[in-house]
Amino acid sequence: MTTAVRKHPDNAADFVANDSRAHWHDQALWFVRSKRDKMAATLPEWELLRERAAGIKLHTMSRLADLLEEFERNATKLGATVHWARTPAEHNDIVLGIIQQHQATRVVKSKSMLTEECHLNPYLERHGIAVTDTDLGEWIVQLLHEPPSHIVMPAIHIKKEEIGELFHQHLGTEKGATDPPYLVTAARKKLREQFVGAEVGITGVNFAIAETGGFVVCTNEGNADLGVSLPKVHIACMGIEKLIPRLADLSVFLRLLGRSATGQPITTYSSHFHGPMPGGELHIVLVDNGRSDILGSPEFRRSLNCIRCGACMNTCPVYRRSGGHSYQTTVPGPIGSILAPSRDAKTYSSLPFACSLCGSCSDVCPVKIDLHTQLLTWRKEIAVRGLLPWTKRVGMYFAGKVLGSRWLFTTAGRVGRWLMPKLPRFLVYNRLNPWGKQRELPPMPKRSFRELYARRSTTSKQEQADG
Ligand code: SF4
Image (cartoon, rainbow, N blue to C red; front, side):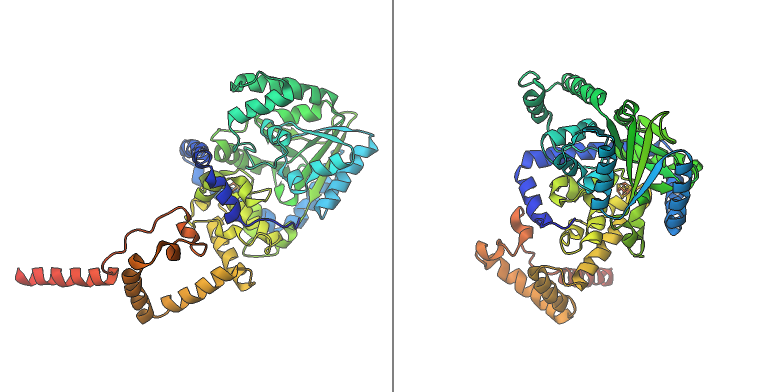
């Protein structure tokens, strides 16, 4: 969806203005990343699993259309109804149509980034449908009227003190209570009422299996199972890239997903769905929303391999220090910075630059997506399409000239070392120098690297000659 969004650096500046929150957010995510490392190290075949997963996804994407049709045939044989949606609008209309067909007004929904991408909740609410997100983190952000800030831990940016206050307002818990078991018990009691009263259950899909027509939903709270066990109507919403060819492939991904996401050996509930429950209905909505276009671009096709584990976010130094909301996309972090410009390069032109190019995201990705290489390619693409801000264009032009000429480079260094200490502060630290917003330049060295190197070579030759 194309909307006017602020650029990432502006949003990030708001986030880092609260230094203690930025620091705490950074540490919380690094803790999850460390758990992932420990868990990965327990499997000697970890790299083999990553290779295998990348290979399966490569194969899947090379014949996605055939596999989707195979999935549709097999799911239909099992009694499900398969719907196809090109856009979020089509997806939302299909879901609303199913709900209205059953004269339902109360819906429970487990975590689904696809429905976030399609802005399903506000759409249904505008049509008089009460939707409750039943994943605890999702429910917290729903109560706060905020989008999730992370695809696996949607409320990772919120402190327990803030949750205590929120629950005090909405659930009547004791004021000032911050004890997690106490707050979780209160949430569970309230959510049970929603589960019992729901007429339709919506889930996402983690993996759909072409060979069987079944699909798997992974949760840690069991809320997807509960949400579709009581209502007779189950709507499962999935992006077309969630497909894998065979049931035998599933174990590769299940072993990678939990470990990469939260450092667990496996997600607590991996629920398999094969057709509707007796006397019930199962609807599967397959959504494109730009995925076919990404499939058609050789540079970015591999971004469709993503299994939404969130590991690239947990490790990314920019994500950790700028928060998920700074990206203003459903999927933030390194993978979001590839997917969003693939849909709307102009609006999200700042995202590929929200990256230090350290490559840590590519190192942890369980399906071996070359994330930092794709981010670099996007930077080039954005420059070629003329989407860079003028400040960067002018800066790059002059940098190109200086770096392209040895004489200019040496002279600029000499002038810089002499001039910089003499300049008034406002000429160095201003709007044109975002780098200096929160940092001080180091003292200027007296000599350049080349001069030091030449001097050192001469000295050592002299020493050798002296014996
Ligand atoms: S790109 Fe890789 S690491 Fe990032 S969420 Fe997707 S699968 Fe996980």
